[in-house]
Length: 202
Ligand SMILES: [Mg+2]
Image (tube, rainbow, N blue to C red; front, side, top):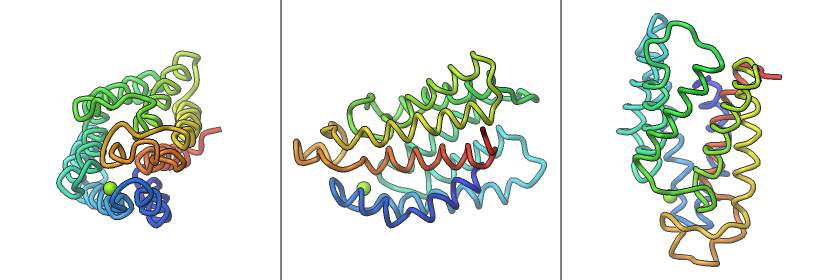
């Protein structure tokens, strides 16, 4: 899942920087590139026998130290929250996956007070986590739950076009921040789409 997300995000680095240039400093593509490189390196170093908990913790730690600005702490805490959420559970099912993503969201919320509607990554992440939970509660498997999460994230990211930024540098632009997709919401949607694609959810 991390490898597929990393590959999809690498293919979109220019797009992410362009989106960030519209309202910020244009570094989001390179920050995501550094993050994905760090996550994949941690994955390789953890080895085949490492648990999801350990891999995600190490990847989260690596991302936090590799990418500066807002991206490193936010994405790093997302991965570390997933690690905590999966815990030592030896069996991964949809309910456990929903709980892990809820823990990830809680972990991100320790880093930012941004809410849906503020034109940030939260506009993709929050509806995605809700979608995983609803899918799991409805009896879906992990691939289907992640596919629904990816769809919710894509929709949430797209909806940031009409929003005015209330966080980050973009906030200073006021109404001029309206009219482009938020770069962080777009990269969050790409991450979740990569996760879903890796599992081939239908
Ligand atoms: Mg930036």
